[in-house]
Amino acid sequence: MTPPSSLPGLPADEATAIAQGLSIIVPVYNEAAGLEQLHERLSALAAKLRQRFSLACEVVYVDDGSTDDTLKLARALSATVLDVQVVSLSRNFGKEAALMAGLDHARRGALLFMDGDGQHSPDLVERLVDHWINDGFDVIYTAKSHRTNESLLRRIGVHSFYAIINWGARQRIPEDAGDFRLLSPRAAAALRRMPERNRFFKGLASWIGFRQFRVDYEPDVRAHGMTTFNAARLLGLSIEGLTSFSVAPLRLASLLGLLLALAAFLFGLSILWETLVDGESVPGYPSLVVGIMTLGGVQLLMIGIMGEYIGKILSELKARPIYFVAEHSVKQAESEPSAG
Ligand code: UDP
Ligand code: MG
Image (cartoon, helix red, strand yellow):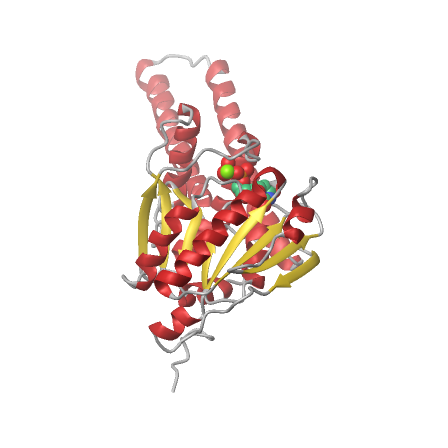
């Protein structure tokens, strides 16, 4: 009998988990220049995984409303060693939505999330799979081994983001962890059960728990083109992540209010002291303006923070689909390995 808390669709044992194979999810947005090369590398990888672990693979390319030839090229990719799915979204929904579409379409047990720009090296995947199959880990995530090539401002921003989001959190989101990660079938099943539509994958994948393992790596340089995540978009993602993962900003509001009230109280005491004991008349104008401006600023900031949460409630309430699929194709690999 299965306990009520167990996840549906779980394999009975490790052998069946491996037999379910691996889905590689690759979001692609205007990646035409490197797509064919990536597919070649993934095919080579699939051949290796099949030989070493007898693991069957499929790749799910999620075209996130590309405006270049990405979709055309993706349709033409051949399924020699691994099954190829191409899911084309009706417009650009953003990477998190594209990952979600990949998750929904993946047909195999384990999941691997990977960028389509060549920065996440297929060569590393063999190691991730090894940690899953031979060491029994459920979530194998990768982290940039250093950030020396990023600007000081960006590093400070990233650091404060994780400091806030992990403040008082039971399950910390590891700093520097990327979206490049492998999930065992039971971790994948857990991820599928998350009902929210505002998704922050890094957060969710660590929130589910299970046996997590960190692999440090050096990200390759982008094969072509430029990153689509500029400062504004990163800020957007940070606010998204913060407000969907922690109430720390709200707690910060209460804390700030408390501190301000305390400061005002002490200030009032000192004014009273000056008037009663020293007999000074108080020239109030500058302190008044400072007080009003501080309070006004803090209140506006906190209203803004609450607005973020209310907006989140609204979008969860509307329960809109996260993406629409315009086109979906599946190509079966030419020869299936004997599963078992
Ligand atoms: N991407 C996407 N939709 C978007 C933006 C990006 O699917 O709206 C994909 C993109 O094709 C790539 C991955 O997300 O495979 C990471 O994007 P990018 O390299 O621009 O980000 P970075 O590596 O700088 O974080
Ligand atoms: Mg990139």
